[in-house]
Length: 163
Image (cartoon, rainbow, N blue to C red; front, side, top):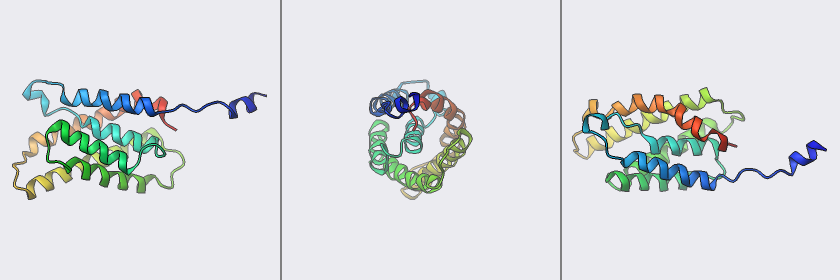
């Protein structure tokens, strides 16, 4: 009997957790901190988007990544579409890397997150250099270190809601 009862058990609906994580991430993104410390702020919206893309592929796809990118552009007052294009390209790349994986371990997701964070920062560097915006490498590569070390925190906070 316990097997039959488990098969009829309802799965967790992640919609409210997705919305809550986006709200919390946006607060962390725009919360005012000292200028000296602001360079060390991790790419929290990117990591939240990556988590949901990796662990809830049915709920979150390319349109989710696009919406998160536009929302991030609006929060950061960045050129509209810059983060959106980066997030969409990262989503395609991430989906390509995990398409045949049945079990995605924490270590695998951490490696994918590191690759995605480096790719995102490289995309920002290339696009801002092409458009003539001054891009300080020392200032814009600091989030790489904090984002790599913040991925386990994001994973730990949201891991109950993965498939």
